[in-house]
Image (tube, rainbow, N blue to C red; front, side, top):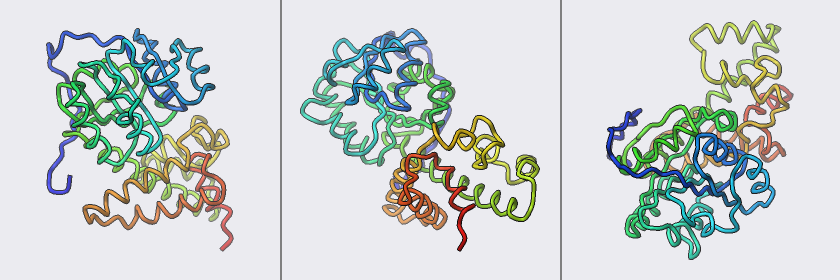
Length: 318
């Protein structure tokens, strides 16, 4: 992606791209995000067959109308399309390119949509194999966290052929509120990693400045109101304030549970850092944010929402 401009556009599809109606969807990964995403597909009239290595996740999904499958091959049986959201580069590559993986078992004409957050080189490895086997493939990572997955307000950032993106739109719209076509394969991952690095940086900065103002004696609610009505306003101050009790729906007001886990923030920042290193793009603030969230993880708070960083700053006596 180094020497090429990529334009990320919110796209309105042209009518008539394909007469195919994809109603039978295989779903891989029924965890905190995938379980809600699959359930929203069912709510919009899709028939969903899901697979996850966790039997508990499959059982929980069944309560929302998802038919459990015993393997990737079983999930793909009769599927028009597949959606996946998986935890790492290796898991995605194994799931798609393994001997018993997606590409080996997908019928010709199937559309594959990977919503995992991975290195941009991962979809670039999968794409030519998928095309050679007669199936479509796009990378379509998401932003919005578990709340967005639950409420079907996710934003999808997609890379791949325009026609495949347009074909995916009925499914993406069932799971989210915004759908962007960002360019060639892997472009969705570039957009997602840039977004999450900025989210990590602004989240860290919000925690830092809220902590400073409160320690200087400002009322937390007054300080937040000032920030939200001044030039410092951001998603972190409006929606995701790290100080407990100020925004009832924020993870900080729920014991920092149910949001975007700190360990996932570390993973995404490390992926973004690797991408930046490969193109020699300076990321001084990204590097600091990566180290700070790593510190939270090493102290045992990897399962807490990344905004827990506020608590570490608040308690730091050094």
